[in-house]
Picture 1: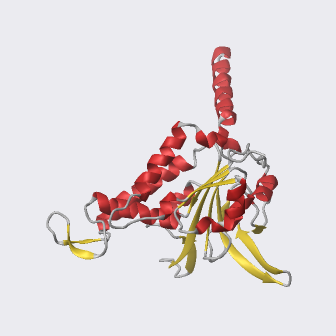
Picture 2: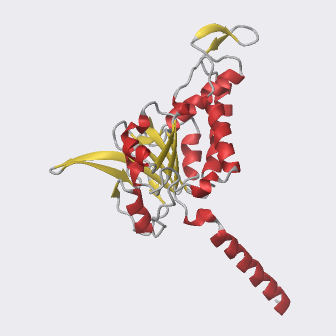
Picture 3: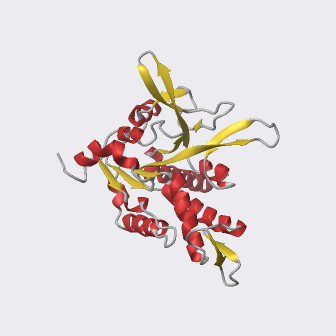
Length: 283
C-alpha cells in the first residue's frame, strides 16, 4: 500500500467515525415495552427523559400521567384515541401530524417520544386500509365493486398493506433525535418446531419478528408480589417463555429484571439521563 493510499483510507475511516459520533441517535434510546394489562407500561413513562410527547391511541391511557401532564413534563396528544370504524381518520391524521412535527424539528426538543400503544395504533392502520379499499364500517355484506365483500372485515390481501405502513413508520420512528418508546400488549403462540409456547408483542404476522429487529431494547412488563407490596418490573432478557432483549446491557450492565425506571436504566448503560428544557409551563 502506498503512502497516499494509506492516507486516503485513514481519512475515510475518520470520516465514517465522525459521522457515527455526530449522529444524534448514537446517544439515543429506543425500546419496545410490552406486557399484559395493568403491568405498568404507561405509568412507567413518567421515568423517561422529559419532556415526553405521547401520541396516544389507547382511550384513557394517559390518565395515570395526569399530574405530569398538568406540570408540562408530559405532552399527551389524545386526538387519535377516538376512532370511527365507519369513517376512520386516526392513522391518516397521526401520519400527517407526525411528519409535520418532523418538518418543524420538534423532536429535537423532545426528551422521549412515545406511541401508546402499538395494539390500537395497528388497528387504526387496518381501519385506514379498509377505508382505502372501500370496505370500512361495521361488519355487513355488500362491500367492494362487486358487492360481494364484507365491510369491516380484513381480507387476506389487506394485511400486507397494513404491515408495510407499520414497518415504514417504525423505521422512521427509531431514526428520531430523541429517545423513542413503543408500548404494546402481549400475545402467545406455539413454536411450530419445538411445540413450546412463547409470548411476544401483539402485532401482525411477520412484523412479530421484523419490528423488534429495529429496536435495541425489548422489555416485557410484569408484576411481583412481595412483603413490601407489588413490584413492577421489566424483563430485559429472553426466558423460555417471554421474548425480551437488551443490546445496551449485553455486557451485564442490566439485571435480568429491572425496576421500571427508564432513567436508572439509561444511567446503568451509560446514556444521557438529563431532561431537555420544558416546552410547556416553564419553571
